Image (tube, rainbow, N blue to C red):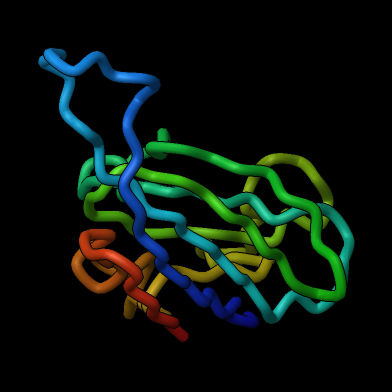
Length: 146
């Protein structure tokens, strides 16, 4: 099974939620621009289903922090997000037949291409959260994970 490659570029900036009066108790929220570039799709059939997770619980669970269904162009996907500082991991698979599920073969082996941030891999099944996690926590940080 072909493993997809996820490149993650982090650019961090500070935003405030709207105009804040001089004596407001509202504090500024640090956010970062996260650009995901996913390569390795064998074709442009279907879509890429991307799960962005922000905890060990939603990494192993069915419900991600945020989910995206993105079209594939030239055998790659680029998705830019603005997120609060924190800890994240990315899971993606190529849903070639657009059925919303990672199709599997006998013994549960994936039949569609998939990948994780940090190019994390598990021995049997998905990798551990700690292998896929990255931090969005500093200004103008740039990284790529293969």
